[in-house]
Amino acid sequence: MTVKRFFANIIVLAVFAAAVFFIGWVQFFVKPRHCAVMQSKTGGIYSKPIVPGSFEWRWERLLPTNVTLTAFSTEPVNSVLAVSGTLPGGETYSSLLEGNPSFSYSMTLQITASVAPEDILELFSDNKISSQKDLDAYIQAAAKAAASSLAEKALKSSTYVSSYSVSPADVSSAMTKAGFGGITVLSASVTEQNIPDMQSYENARALYAQYSETLSAELAKKAQEQAAIIAEEDRSMQKLEKFAELLKKYPELQEISKSGDITKIMDALGALR
Image (cartoon, rainbow, N blue to C red):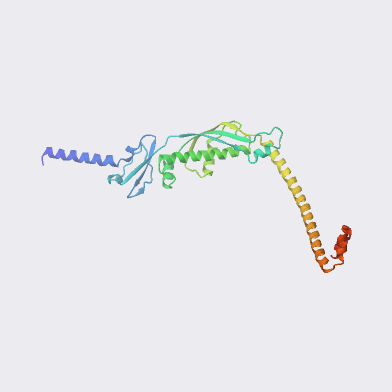
C-alpha cells in the first residue's frame, strides 16, 4: 500500500467518523433557549431532555428515520388574565339595599412562568403535551385556573389584594391544586382589582334569607287555610249528595227543600251525619 493510498483511507475514515459523530450529536440540532424530547422506534422516549450546551451523543440517530426530536421553547411565557363576574345572588341582594349597590367584581393578574426541560419531558411522557402549541396551551390553562382561584380567595378576604400584589408561591400553589404541575412561576402581580363591599353583601344575603323565611311561613299559613276551605267545601258537597239521595228515598223531605229554608235544610243534613 502506498503512502498516498494510506492517507486517502485515513481521510475517508476521518470523514466517515465525523459524519457518524455529527449524526449522533443530538444537541447540535437544538436551538438556544430550547430543549428537545427524543423518541426512537428502538427505545421509545429518551430518559433525559436534550438541551444546548450539554453534550449528548446517541447511537439511535445512526438508523435512518429511527429518531424524532420534538423541540420546545424554554422561554418564559407572560400571561395577562382578567377575571370578572357577580357574586352569587348579587343582583337579587342588591335590590334589597338602598342605592342598589353593585356586587360585581373584576381582577387582572399578570403571571410570568416557564417550564424546565425536565418538566417538559415529564409532561411529554405523561401525554399532556406533544408540541409547542400544547405546551403554550398548558401554561395558559394553568394561569387561568390560578387566576380564578386567587380571585375567589380575594373575594373571601377583601384585604388579600389590597396591595395589588400576589406572590409567585401563591400562583404556583393554585396551579398545583388545579392539577397543573411542572410550571415554575417567575413573577406574579395583580394589576387591577375591583372587589365589592363584602360586609354589605353578607348583610343583604342575611336580609334576603330572613325575607325568604317569612315568605315561606306566610305561604304555609295560606296553604293551610286554603286546605281547610277545600275540606269544608268537600264535606258540604258530600252532605248535599247524601241529601239528594234521601229526597229520593223519603219524599216527605221534598217539602223542606221546597221551602228554601237553609237552616232547616242544614239541620236535616246535620241529623243525617
